[in-house]
Image (cartoon, rainbow, N blue to C red; front, side):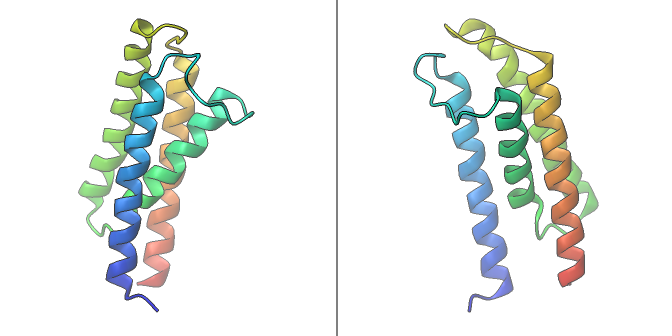
Length: 118
């Protein structure tokens, strides 16, 4: 069995990989982007919830957790704006809102589960 610290580091790394995947998939032209079959808003929600959970789990500092949450929301807004310049993509407020809601859920879930295990 892995030590708690090793699992936390592995989750953090998975979160970074997840964020890079979000970035790459967000800047691909619409025709090149893979689709899961779910709505784009559901994809945003689930992706940001998972990444926020992985990045926030194990962070004890409230300030650092909030910085991760704000960073994810700001980067989501940046990526939405960037999509206005990418063929076949559009920037939508609903995309930003679904990403922000997912990030908040992942943030809260990580905090609650980490506190219960501590």
